[in-house]
Length: 151
Image (cartoon, rainbow, N blue to C red; front, side, top):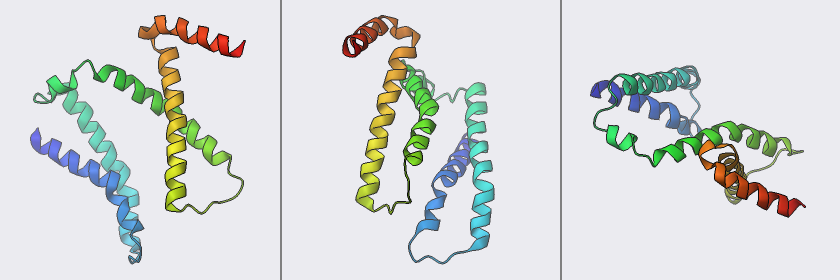
């Protein structure tokens, strides 16, 4: 159990953060290394997620179970699901509005990511408030305020 969890953690982190090596300035390009990473990182990520699902369903990760069953994670799980559903549209919108390629300096990159994050958070919170069934009493307040602003 622990060996598989440790292996899944190493494989998952290397799949996620292994690409930074290719962006080191002045580093020599190795086609074989690039081909191995490009072909294997998806498989490694899939194996990691598969282990999380199988290990979570069969053993419930006994030491982590009290932490994972906290009620505070319920709204967080709903918010991350809303983020999963909306982040693609936000990214397509921000890239679709560009009419020409941009040079991204570090300050420009930080500002654009902050603005994208703000837009995404506003959409996520609106989806969470409007669509979540446990917040039905808040929907009345939300729509009254929205109607008051529009009308």
